[in-house]
Amino acid sequence: MSTHITAAYALAVLGFAVGVALAARLATVDDADTDRGKFAYLLAIPGFAGLMYIVMALDVGVLTVGSETIVLPRYVDWLVTTPLLVGYVGYVAGAPRRWIAGVMAADAGMIAAGAVATVTTGPTKWAFFAISGGFHLSLFYVLYRVLPTYARNFSKRRGLFKLLQNHIGLLWVAYPLVWLVGAPGLGYVSAAGITLIIIYLDVVAKVPYIYFVWNRRYCFDRDAAES
Ligand code: RET
Image 1 (cartoon, rainbow, N blue to C red):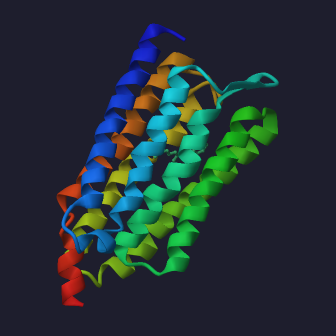
Image 2: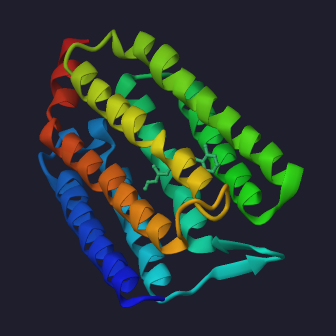
């Protein structure tokens, strides 16, 4: 692995460390608020990503399956942390458990099918890409059509909900496009280029997300008092 890529992984680990520090403060701050925002749970997002990034920086877990290559820790990271990112948005919206579980399951399906698409070839690859894309669309449907009907009931939390909804809405469409132009798809962009783009996207998808919650941490309290 080139030193540039190793350096980018190391920088990302630093970024996730900032996310962990922020999430840790969020989890320990303001006595009674802690339960209402379920803040402790957010620690796992930059925490687990940081761990997988250390593994990637060490160049461990790059597997070759037939003619295809997969960076396994990347998919393990996504499989664990992206359902948490999207599930927490459901929690902020005040959605019932079945929708939170449903959107988390769709997300996990998207990542698992994407991993299969990455290591297969020919029609199988494109079938799994389509399955992953289908899960992606269903996730966006829940995010933009279902969750807002619940978020509407909260005056203060709604602001944080919209922020996280659009943060995901803007960033997450980039992933299938990057996959498409990279080696697992059409191969227009070099593996090193794709790796750098994904590192950047992953940090931006996770660390500012924690910051947004930190910034609006009191919204849970006020709405709880109102209802
Ligand atoms: C894949 C492959 C094929 C199709 C689709 C994909 C979507 C991936 C997404 C990943 C999001 C990752 C995030 C990481 C944060 O750190 C698996 C690339 C639809 C949406 C947000």
